[in-house]
Amino acid sequence: MIQAIPVLLGATLLIFMIVFALPGDPIAALFGDKRPDPAVAEVLREQYHLNDPLLLQYWYYISGVLFRGDFGVNFADVPVSQVMAGKFQVTLNLALTALVMEALIGVGLGLWAALRRGKATDTAILASTLLLISVPTLVTGFVLQLILGVKLKLWTGLDIFPVAGTFAGWRSYLLPGFVLAGTSIAYLTRLTRTSLVETLRADYIRTATAKGLPRRRVIGRHGLRNALIPLVTYLGADLGNLMGGAVITETIFNLPGIGNQLFQSVYLREQPVVVGIITVLVLIYILANLVVDLLYAVLDPRIRYE
Picture (cartoon, rainbow, N blue to C red):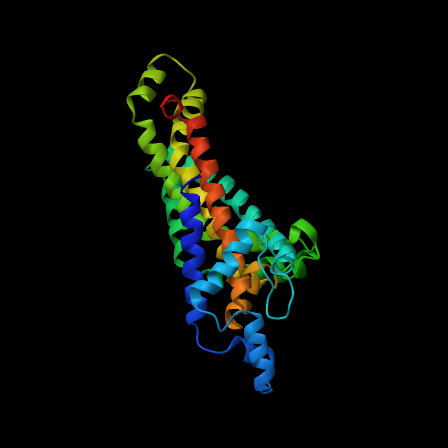
């Protein structure tokens, strides 16, 4: 928790410097193709502190966040928190859907492959994960959108997987959630298989088996529980990756999430919006890692005793 403070300050300062270094004039972008009146442009630059040094601009921003919970306003005088509110909900729904799919499918396939190590099932699962890793998300999204979203509807008459928007409620997140989680599912499957295979070779597993414990209990309570530590670490870190990496998926499925907003804000050089989004993502990373640290003690008694 103490480390969260320098991490937050460092990440926000870094992204602030990057946005500040981008070419172009954010005030000129407000006027589109029209040339702004120099006097008006100067007033706007003073209003948004654009004439101040970088570190002073950063101080205005970070002091508002830390002391007042205020992310500031964008260059259209709309509060940044208001800009992020609805869009973060869409991306959070998408990321949680992807995380659940990732956990269920990835751990399930990895467990299945580990228990059938060296057999045809194991080989097929490993080959499938390699294929999933190799195909770009952009290609996977359009292919599944065409087959499951369009062709399946023509063949069956059932609109099971909507291809755009959020009008169908939770069903709107099924297809984009799988596309977003695709690569992570493949990595988690391989990680689960490797971790469980190594765990099942341990001496305490051999001892539990020799004592006559049922195989299901040996694998579930002694094997899988200890193999979960690297999996929980991966899932905790991946939550932030899913939220921050949803730009392509949200674009393909036309989801009004934070990914699209972040892209537009970078393009328009809206520093308060970009840094506000990054700040929230950093906080999600920190919270997820804190939860992972606490889960270590639940999964492994040795950590709890230390």
